[in-house]
Image (cartoon, rainbow, N blue to C red; front, side):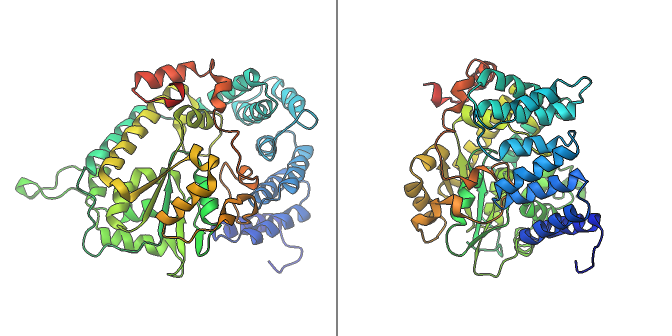
Length: 431
């Protein structure tokens, strides 16, 4: 870091390592240094833009995106990042530019994906909903074509988890970590998990590890390689769910505690949404951990996922039929956890949170054993870094405009509605 001038790629690599260590301002400075040494490399500007967004410096992030695109109009992720930085308006948007790029001949699916989501988002901001949905559908199809995914596999996995952790199996084994300083925020993506995280980290003595796989890694490491011995002394074949249910819970707790870090006094948030898969195991290994489930109305939640480009996770979200099937399987698993874990789960409804952030937030704080103060709902003043899909949105005061957004797309979402109904998913927003 002290060498002058150094090599841009080395600064870029050090920035990536700094992110992994949670040193976000250092990462930002290193990304900026890379742009200074190699200002003609668009990727460095995109990385800087991502860093600026994570720290809430949205104008700087937009300028970095613009610079990346000036250098190379094919730096496609920059279009999407830029679109998500603010609410576009009639006087300031990039619709025509995005339309021109999408009209290029022989455009590859990767370009259609980023450009389509970016244009859909900006058209949605402008209230041009029919056009927006066409863009979302095109981009989602482009993404889905390149995924090796079978929703039936996920449906089976979620059923097997419920079978492996039946009612009455949540009692922790002797020696399991009794610590109550861990807070697991779970729920489907785009359900409000980041908003809840920002509110809780606005309270004293709370920090977030972000979206880590710490618990899943600890569980896998402490799970037996095979099932227990059967007649004849031979272990029966055991799938990963059966092995997980037979884990050494004290070992899971100890390994998780090492991975989670902390000074032993602060409360630590784990905000990987898909930890909903592990609620039964979390309860066994960490019986006093706080379990916070975020729920959202099905159609708002499903549409919010459909219109979002994720990384490697959530492959079910790019096709309306697959989305409906996964949602139904998820709802069945959550119903199972509600039955088996009962009051150990504190549920927050997104709609109630944004309508009454002070009351809902105070109840959440009590459930987590935290001291509440009303300043926590000023999430736009929370300076902590955020790298989730909501990283730009949480820089704004809590807003209600996402409630009922699916109504603008009702005609387009009819296949989703019908599929959810056939799967017996309750749709209270249609009642």
